[in-house]
Length: 144
Figure 1: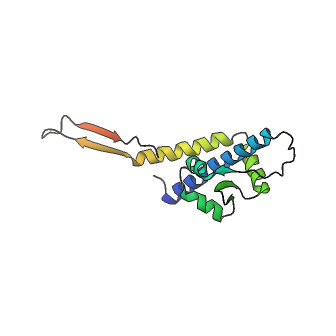
Figure 2: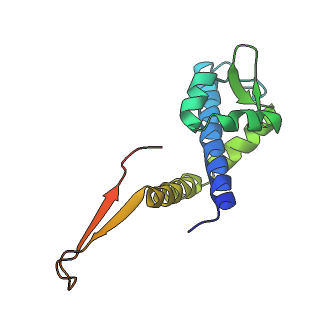
Figure 3: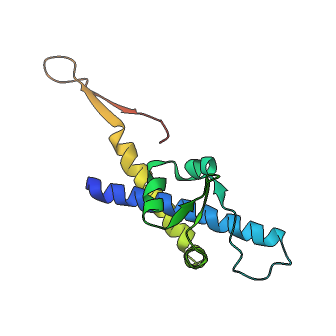
């Protein structure tokens, strides 16, 4: 069993890093499409709000990241890092050798814990002496 606060923190951080990965990928693709632009100070356009919602899966976290000045939401509803410095820090974190492995591990742990919450067991006894016990395990296969 896991403390609810710890689970919420893991969900928030993993969703945030999924978004940050998408922002770095977007900025790198934009830089690659403009090879004349060697200067790293070009501010990326960002990703559309709808794409950010799909990447994060928890849209309520977008406003929290905006409030904490980690991302900026412009008037066209594009999500981008709050600054070039933030983008460079995110890029450095995402390019660490075992970053993806650690993020996948956290995502798997969250999935496993949530799966336990969706699993129910029934015990069915037949007869007076308890012989013929049947244990039925029901798992909800919904994706969250």
